[in-house]
Amino acid sequence: MIGRLVLFGATGDLTARYLLPALAALRSAGHLGDRTQLTCASREDWDDGQYREWAAAQLGRHGGHLPAGARDAVAASVRYLRADVTDPADVAAAIAGDGPVAVYLALPPAVFPRAVTCLHQAGLPAGSRIVLEKPFGEDLAGARELNRLLGRLVPEQAVFRVDHFLAMTTVQNVLGSRLANRMLEPIWNSTHIAEVEIVWDETLALEGRAGYYDRVGALKDMVQNHLLQLLCLVAMEPPITLGERDLRDRKVDVLRSVRTLTEDDVVRRTRRARYLPGRIGDLDIPGYTEEEGVSPRRRTETFAEVELELESWRWAGTTFRLRSGKALGRDRKEVAVRFRSVPHLPFGHSGEALPNVLRFHLEPEGLTLDLTGIGAHAHQLTALSLTARMEPPGLPAYGRLLLDVLHGDPALSIRGDEAEEAWRVLEPVLSGWAAGLVPLEEYPAGSAGPPPRRR
Image (cartoon, rainbow, N blue to C red):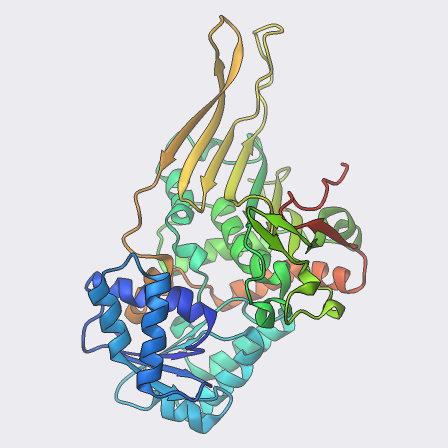
């Protein structure tokens, strides 16, 4: 286990909301001790005391459910450095020390190439690891170049392109439900499944993240990485093991099987939109272009939807719809597997059998199976729903990922060829949207999104 962690971007939203609480959770569970060295680096001209005060406040705000002793221990153990990740001398000072180091780049993707170059110039100790947040690059060419730079720095096994969705309990349960239940795997194919909808709709608006989000948008922020990862777990062939090679090989197979979208497909099978002023609960929400730090000229989307088809024996004929939107009227975060209707009903005119739907709820975590059954009157059909709630995970998703990094297990990180294939899938969408083939629709904040398209 690596005993040193250097975190660049240590005053950002990702660190405050997720990484510091994840470290406290690891401390509370006994995975981190006093000998673990934590160096936090950012551009703010602070000293150790100022950063520790800030870290303690963020841990109280975002990790208040964790034991106070663990939060205090993490905040007190931090060493802070003012550093520019694009300055080789600053980078060398941050990673200086004995033995291998895990370097976490909690930074915007545009900074990755320069940061990796500086790490190469500084010279990482043997056995070190590097962690990069999504999205990995900004397009296919950028991902290929970044992979080339990383290959000069460390072996592929030491590169952790993390996506915390893969460590969520319910996401892991997609594989568990498929592969550990005899009744599901035989019908997990296009003969029985008509459509899979992978959705991350949230009531959350921009929340001060314009500096990052306005340069990325919903397609790159959510669909290109998180939702495509969920697609891989839903559609992959059963791996021999859940080891990093077997699991990641099968995920790459899924991405390679996605049919390349034509310009006509982009027009018919993709949508983009952004929110107008509206109301969510008791809050008045300004329109996206009125948010501080947003440039209307970028025409950044806050809603993205893409329909994909897989050219494989198992999935030919099934539609995979990936959708994500901000500032919507309700949170809906799930994988919905819609089965085909039964071929015949012997109940006369006693009602309609709705298609069975298996829903993997991502937040809050749970599982629901929608069925059709008999109601109070004989032969009268009625809707039934079976629901299961998951036990709270032992570690938060980022805690699991950080532990994998420290132990050197890349199974839940994204391999280089996988990152490139994900961009390959969406390159036609990016090009088509840039060319204006798909209009930028609008929807009021607090609504269900843009009006449904007539099919």
